[in-house]
Image (cartoon, rainbow, N blue to C red; front, side, top):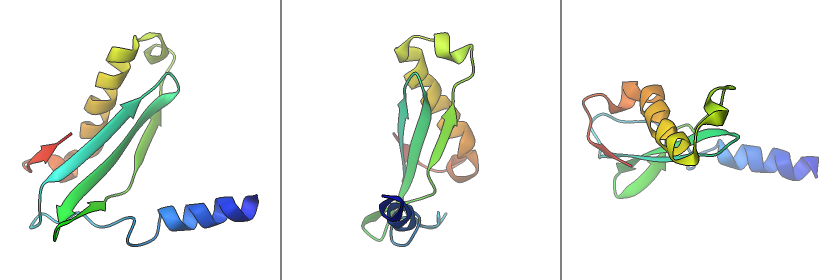
Length: 96
């Protein structure tokens, strides 16, 4: 089993899975999710007709945030993901 986990990790972090954001390329796409365990996001950018994934992002909830209703947790995932990727998204067109 550890061999499969190591192989999966290598696939997830190797090209063409992850790319580099390019200011001169297409629109950014931010896919987010929130749960009672934590928040996550997959930022992508349309480059040359393909969606290229930029490094994944995740964050655990603190004690107060674990008391939020699921709607607020989902909204928090959007806000936190935008904040975490503001250096790509500031001034750029993006959708989620």
